[in-house]
Image (cartoon, rainbow, N blue to C red; front, side, top):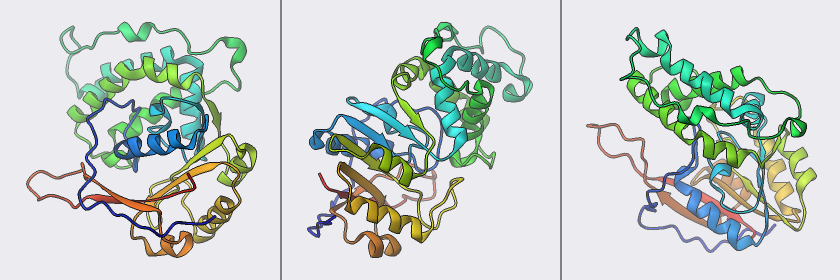
Length: 291
């Protein structure tokens, strides 16, 4: 793999068009702001198979407009969630409605016709026929996954600092999007593999890999990367038959030592601003690609 050294860091923050992207839940490190750039590289690659190697909350896979999607994550909880959407999205929606109507979520407010939301989307049929279903997922656990991340501070899934009003509004929007989400996910191939196994399984001249590995020195995920994992990933990219796009935090000394200079760097508006505490600097992402 030959990394280009003609860096071109954008002097201004990349401004993304306000688009109603599909999203399932709050999750650390979601890639909504860079989806246009990922989509652009994918289209230029000329490939049809899109492999989301570190799929996470699915924010990238859910918003790819073309191609066949292979979603992968090492976290069995996330894999169960997307398999549950394939298996019975209607039941999942019903469970989320029950959570909205529950005493705990409403903090004791009496349930009335005024504070309930319309249930039209709850009439959806299961996403795929019974004959095409594999191992039956735990739909109840999938609902708990959405609730846990949505109600937690920063989407981290463990610290419950989110205000009830914000969490409720977010969950309502998730429910309103579920039919479109289920239509997307119904066509996915869903894997629960180590990235090494996944790349070896799907690497071909017709495949595009998007790689957004766990951030270095941030314990956000159930499976965090060691230095040797980044080195293994680098070595696999060198010999890859297909096309790829790797995105990581810019100006990370460890990752630059391993992957070399990026092809380019872009800055994005930091939308996690605290009112009254000034403006946070933009987030910068490093892009490595063989497209």
